[in-house]
Length: 211
Ligand code: UDP
Ligand code: MG
Image (cartoon, rainbow, N blue to C red; front, side, top):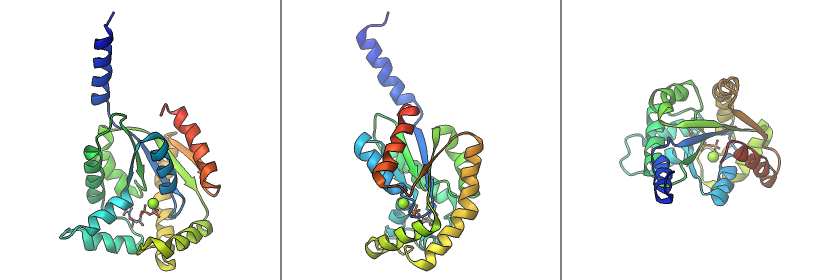
């Protein structure tokens, strides 16, 4: 029989050595990925890593050698080379000091290059618990992003960029969702419902996977 102190120590050590648990969060531009992640963070305190936000932060750094490249991809709705995105995600995971080990990776992986780079550099370091996928029509996505564009200051929340982003989503990102569907990892939500209703459905999945 282990003493209480030993059991506590064993539990603490297993938290330290356990691989980080990851949920990918995917869906079209404006599908509500960031909104639902914000709600999860508020209620559960898990870590939200938005690949898009990390790229925008990197773009804004004075002297960043990737700034212009990132901006041109964002404006064109194309995907930044995975080496850049993966290293930002890896660094952000390492810099977040948390005891629960639970990470939401929002807006990644978005294409084959992302999937390949992730598989090579990161997949073995984490425990992928699933993919939350938010299904929203192009029409609704576009309306939401144009609404957001009025205040977001984002260089890609305009009609021209949105058309390109949607094209990338259908052609490049959906095959990644399908790849994970075949592995039985995808949880699909109707992202056109209210944020509260979407969050409720997501919470049921969180319970199911033991989060
Ligand atoms: N992006 C990328 N790789 C990623 C995530 C984002 O290249 O892993 C770029 C891409 O150009 C995308 C843009 O960042 O169109 C905005 O992504 P974000 O996820 O912030 O947009 P959202 O889908 O949330 O509207
Ligand atoms: Mg987002």
